[in-house]
Image (cartoon, rainbow, N blue to C red):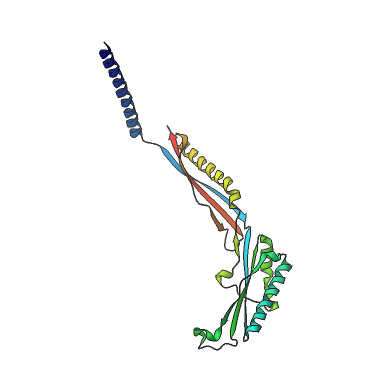
Length: 237
């Protein structure tokens, strides 16, 4: 009697298993036949900000036939530039100096066929690091007055240009990401409405890199920050 009972129970369990398996196979075939409907959208967030850190290397050149006098000229030029920056409103601790470079013109092979009125060429740089953008803009316009002090500026080299940067990105990251996500969802909802569907849950999402660029060539102190997020939503029939 117990043997027959075990056979009946085993048969019922097997039937239930086959029925359950058949249901999931049917469900899978149905999903395969209808396909998974999704929409992928991108959301943009953009901010225009002022640079919050400025590096201004004020480079100069001096010449002489005597090394001692050349060094004296370098120190004199440094002091004139420092006094100029202090008058413009900058602080002494915002300034630093690079080691001067001195070239013996007579020792340069490329200068052997040319005659120079001096033997030594010295270069120096007063480096200003500040967060005061407005002072830099004003001082840069007024730097022409250094010429009347006998300062020969050397701003043609790429390493001697004013560099404007923005270091406060972390403080605005969260709100920009939120804005980009909201813009992405708005675009997805519009697509769902147009396709007579409903917007479902997020299937996947990725945050693009933040980019910081100058607004244009003439205003490098104004920065444009952008981020693009990519979001994929399910569409519900």
